[in-house]
Image 1 (cartoon, rainbow, N blue to C red):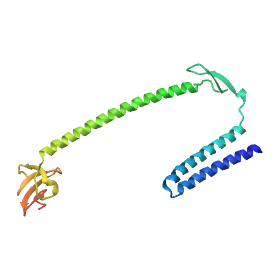
Image 2: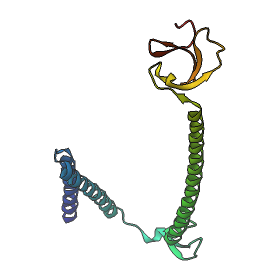
Image 3: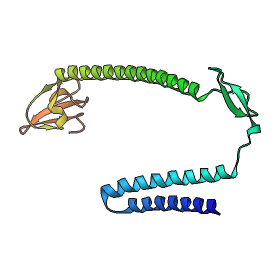
Image 4: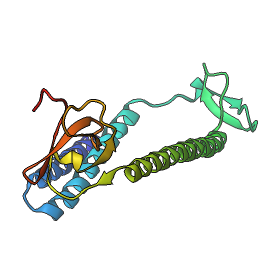
Length: 193
């Protein structure tokens, strides 16, 4: 009876902490409701897990005849394992393997990251160099332009225009440009006029 009361009390306490944390998270007090609410929810979840773990351990009592000793595959130390298990790697060796794997993974990740970053920086520099070369070719003329993208461009030999001058504008299209009423008016072809 005493165990039932203890387990029930612990379960009720953990549920109350969890629900109290959820209530604190719903309040409109920005900082404290967040800090206290998250802490309360986390404590509630941990206590619920511990309560169920305690209940399961009390109901399931391990039998020593179901276990045997087996040597670790790496360090050869004796370990208790269930009867059906034939091999084991002890916790110490697993930790060493995990640390070694973690270090190897970090080196591989760093190499991939540095290589990718170097390639991307090189591509970025190449794009900037090309853009600077293109900008040097364009000649910007002050004044009003229609469209505005033709304010900067390159005059070309007049091969397509029946009137005006041919201009390759910053947007990459060729236009026929005329000086009309103090403004440069550019058309893609004579039909647009």
